[in-house]
Length: 196
Image (cartoon, rainbow, N blue to C red; front, side):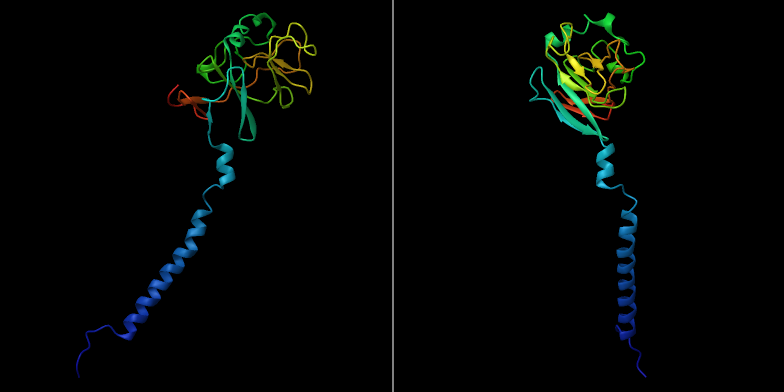
């Protein structure tokens, strides 16, 4: 009787069964492993946000959203920056000692670079959304209004650095989120490390 050294039907069935079983195991494992990855919505809610400031005109503001909160980015003019030192005696926390901001934004202008202000647009009283009121001395806010942010819910007022005025319900300055400059035209909000 001669010995067969070729590929038999039994070998073919064994290889086909192993390959089919392996493919089935991989097809079953991929969705299971993928379920450990956070959803795109969850990633977007916590992920840093980039803001292009190259087209933001002086005196203008843009809004973005991060973690369900409005973030204000303001391109302050020299006149706007000039008002910051004048009203220190009217502010609850002029040196931002009790307020939230990164260390490199703990200064008079509450920003990494004086020109661009980055704030969370959430009033520290009850979480309403303050409005940008950059005009000086409008009739509804009074002749001493230097420009800043006004919360229409309960009348809290903040200057052009997000610092809260005395005599209003808000207890703290508007928070400054962690952020950094990626380059001269781009801010990354939600990350403090890197270029500034």
